[in-house]
Length: 280
Image 1 (cartoon, rainbow, N blue to C red):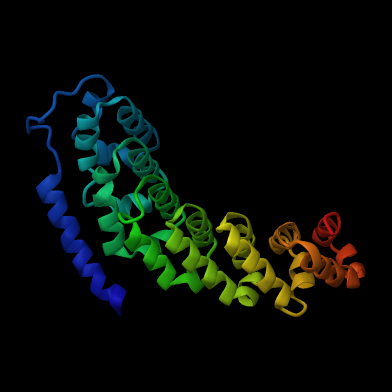
Image 2 (tube, rainbow, N blue to C red):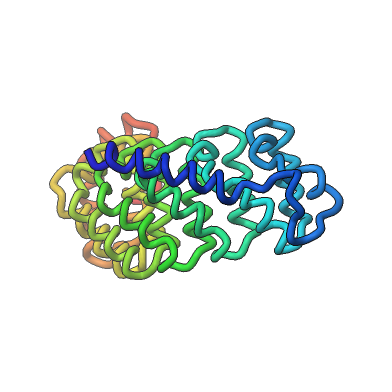
């Protein structure tokens, strides 16, 4: 119901932004343009939707001055969600993120939030833009994006594309958000570890979360009866077990080894289990 209420609001925002900020060939630009930029100005959105055109726009963004980049990016106002779903235009958004200063990227964040940030995180192309924004922008600027993922963590972490966003946040978000996400992984350890994509989040958390969180996660995995051997035989989960053996030390590592070797026959019957045995 909340998404249904957000959609008309976003459509109104999209129409307003397009009418107010879309440059026109008939309007004199504030800054003179030349070279590749001159061939794309006024046609950025049109070109961005095509395979050849999107490469031309990306090249213009790379070569343009700061002010011209802003002008070119302004032509994407009101089109962010369309670009997130486009196999071509998403690359233009990513290039904007890579070449513009963070404050000039606020319109992308605003439109993603209005259209549903968690939906963007689960989009085939949108997840890429989401990750680039997390890398490029200050934590405070992207906090709404991150908090939307946290609010829908159980779904996003198990999603074919969303899991990559969660792993990226575990590495690049603010310390507070990284800690929060690590706790969510720990609380849902058994469920995530048994899920095809959730298990990649567990593995990612064990290598990308803060050091103290990695140890806590490894101990949580060890506490779950029978889980260590179970995921050691899975395609994505076995990496989490290998990482657990690397994180745990002393008696805790020996206990993990003991549990694995107790079911050595099961591990040897699986190519993933055999990989784990090499580290045990």
